[in-house]
Amino acid sequence: MKSILKPVEHELVIKKSTFIAYVYPVAFSKDIDHILSALRTKYPDASHHCFAYVLGEQGDQQKADDDGEPSQTAGMPILEVLKKQGLTDLLCVVIRYYGGIKLGAGGLVRAYAKSTSEALKKATYATRVKMLTLQINTTFPLLGSVESYLRSVCDISDIIYEDTVTFVVEVKEADYPMIESRIRDLTSGASYPDIIREYNQYQ
Image 1 (cartoon, rainbow, N blue to C red):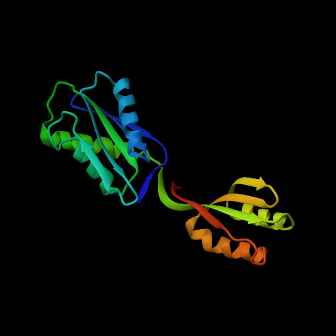
Image 2 (image 1 turned 120 degrees about the vertical axis):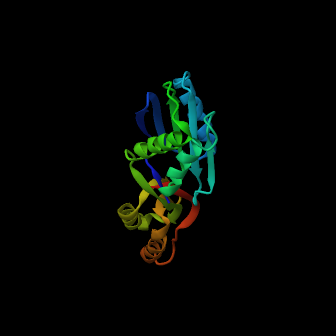
Image 3 (image 1 turned 90 degrees about the vertical axis):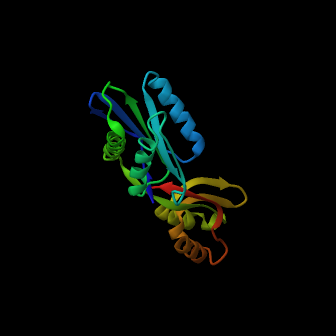
């Protein structure tokens, strides 16, 4: 599945009603309440703050909220657009200022879906990649060759100098077998990468 790298915004006017769509990348459900609260503060006089979100590696955490619009006419259309595009780890909020002309159930569904789709056209997409944090311990005589290799294939987040040298590096899970094999070769089997953390990152 994929997500977006940074927030996007799009404004749409339909029959005098203004729809302002915001789409945010989010990693945790706790972040959603903060974003919703901030938008309600920014647009306190809006008629509705409708939203939907999809979270999780398989997009299995989902919620849609109509915020006072007729049932299934706002939050669900937003959610369906997110699901149709195979997106996860993001929140879409569509803020509506009522313009005095009723759109009807079908009109609302189309308006909220279009607002979401148009906002997503502005997004920069990224694919979810499984990452590993590795710890590699080696001796000072091997420091130069090990450091040179690591800098060529991954990001070094820390180097700890004590009686020996410990590298902390970030690598793609798919690259781990290659790095493990090369480190063993460079150190004649004396050193190997130890996995200390697994996490996901969008790239």
